[in-house]
Length: 383
Image (cartoon, rainbow, N blue to C red; front, side):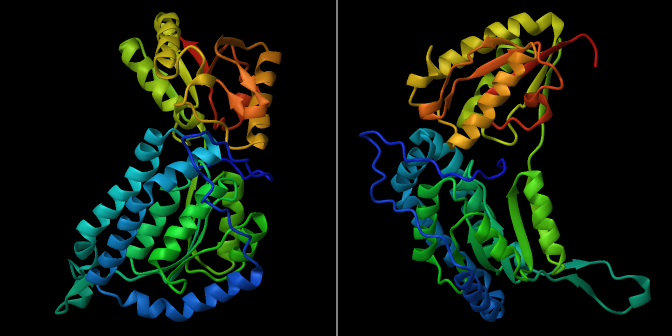
C-alpha cells in the first residue's frame, strides 16, 4: 500500500550498469481516451466473460512469458525510478508476479468449476450450486511503492476471473509505468486490458465511469474518495490501504533474530512498505541489547554508510523526501534521540536507516503512517 500521491515525478537516477534510455514514459490519457476504452471494454466484456479456463490460461502464459522476457527492462526501470537493486527487484517485484501467474494457471480450472452446496428444505427436490461469474469491467488504480508487483497482481486475478481491465499505474514511477504499458500492449488487446497513464486528473476521469469493480491500493484518504465514487454506481471495491504497524518484542524473544528480521523488514525498499514495522515496543530488559544488535544488522546489510550501498533504495521523489525529513526534524524538536543514523541528502532524496528513541507520542512520525526509513522504538515494562 502506498502513501498518497505527490504532485511531482522523480527524475531518473541511473549509473553505467543501468540503461533506462529505452524506457520512455508515456503521456497522460485524455478524458476522451479513457471514455473510448471504457466503452470498448463494456462492449467486449460478455465475450471475455464467456472464455474457457484454457483460453484464460493461455493469456496468463503469454503474460508470464512477457514479464520474464522483459526482466532486465523491469530492473532498469525500477533503478531509474528509485534505485532499487536488481536482486531486490527480482525478489519483491518479478517473483511475486510470476508466482501469482503460475498459481492462477494451476488452480483456474478448479476455481471456475461450479461448487455444489446444500439445498435448503424450502427447495427440497432441487440441486444447489455456486456458479462463479466475472464482474465485468474492472478499474485497477495501482501504487508506486511496488509498481510492478502491486499492479500486475490484481490484473492477474481479474484476467483469470474473465474480466476486462482498465489499469492506471502510478505517475510517480514513470519508467515502471512505461514498461508495464509496453508489456500489457504486447499481450492484450485494449478491448480486454488497457493502460491509461496520468495523475490525479486521469484517476478522477476514470472514477467517474460506471465500472463493475474498482481495485485501489493507496492511502486511506484517497481510498475514501474511491469508495465515494464507486458508491454512485453501486460498484464493489477492493481497498488495500495503509496504517500504523506496531511490532512488539517481549522478554522471551531472541534479540539477535528479532533485530535481524526487523532491520530487513523495515529498510527494504527504504521503508516504503505498508506492512513494514512502523514502530516498536521492546521490553525494557531487552531494549539496550536490541538497539545494539539492530545497528549491527543494519550495517551488515548496507555497510557503515548506506548512501554508498547499491542495495539501499531512495525515497521515490522529493515530495516524500521532504515529508519524511520533516517528520525527523519534528521528532528531534520534540525531544527524540537519534539512536542510529539520521543522515539525509536532499539532492538524492536520500534518508539513511534511522532509529529514534524517546519519541513524543504526538510527534508527526507517530501520528502519521511513516512509509519510510524512520523507526521509533519504545521501551515497556508491561502492556
